[in-house]
Amino acid sequence: MNLKAVTFLVLFAVTAAQTVSNDTLPLIIWHGMGDCCCNPFSMGHIKKIIEEHVPGIYVKSLMIGPNIAADIENGYFMNVNDQVKDVCEQIASNPKLKNGYNAMGFSQGAQFLRAVVQRCGHKVRNFISIGGQHQGVFGLPHCPTLPEKSRVCEYIRKILNHGAYHHWIQDYLVQAEYWHDPLNEELYKEKSVFLADINNERVINQTYIDNLNALNNFVMVKFLRDTMVVPIESEWFGFYAPGQDKDVLPLQETELYLQDRLGLQKMEGEGKLHFIAYDDDHQRFNEKWFMTEIVDKYVA
Ligand SMILES: *[C@@H]1O[C@H](CO)[C@@H](O)[C@H](O)[C@H]1NC(C)=O
Ligand SMILES: *[C@@H]1O[C@H](CO)[C@@H](O)[C@H](O)[C@H]1NC(C)=O
Image (cartoon, rainbow, N blue to C red; front, side, top):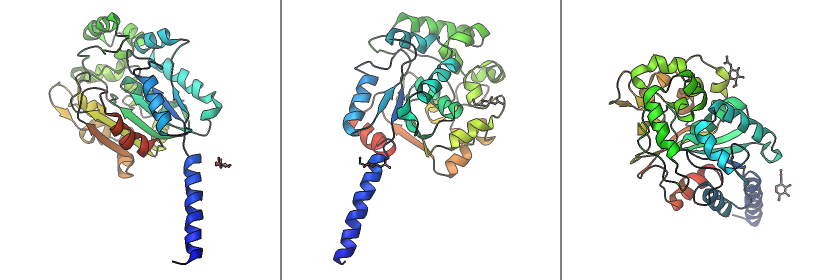
């Protein structure tokens, strides 16, 4: 190789590196149930380690409501459709996010952020779901063990088992809004104010399909030994076969996929769906793995 070629390659590499660093998009994160935007042991920590790992990145950890107490409470009692609307507005009014962003949701925050992708019409490049429940849950085996753990969660478990689809429960109880009873599929489709809507189970909203398809990557992490999420397969967009709660179907065998209600067949064909397994309990992951397999590949 002559000197000119080497010089060209070096210049090219420098330019490419600059392009990459300019290209680092902001990151939005949305916390899970019982958690909040800024807990130094959970989302606060995640934000900090990503900022240390990716120089210059802007990370916005979503707070729903005016303060941390409200943020935690809203994770149980603020209608998810209103939360999503609030987030659409928070993002749209933030000048740092106007050129697009990546989005990462933790647990229930993942299905909520997917609704943001589908409804708000923002420029989202990669969407990462860490233990999200994309076909909902049928059971809440125990409550989170975060410092804010509250008795409220135990109370919610009882209500869900009684009548998740009563309209007054649907209107205010967050976990009821992604409660998916496989023994009552029709009731779920008719009454679920949030999940059945974003999964296009009542009608097909083409906007949802187009916005989801506009992603470069839709990454789903499933915790193989998850004791919080029932069924675990929901973290990879699978669910129980209808009419019973024993046999679980992978996404590709569910009605939602076979009828292509969300355009997931096309996304899979384009290599946009990524199914990642992690062999531990809910939200328990090693930071080195998180950096190399998630942040370096889809955020940095
Ligand atoms: C990329 O970053 C460099 C260095 O910070 C800056 O000079 C340049 O204007 C940026 N380019 C774009 C397109 O933002
Ligand atoms: C489809 O979703 C978009 C974005 O949320 C909404 O504006 C529109 O009203 C929905 N259309 C139907 C038919 O529900």
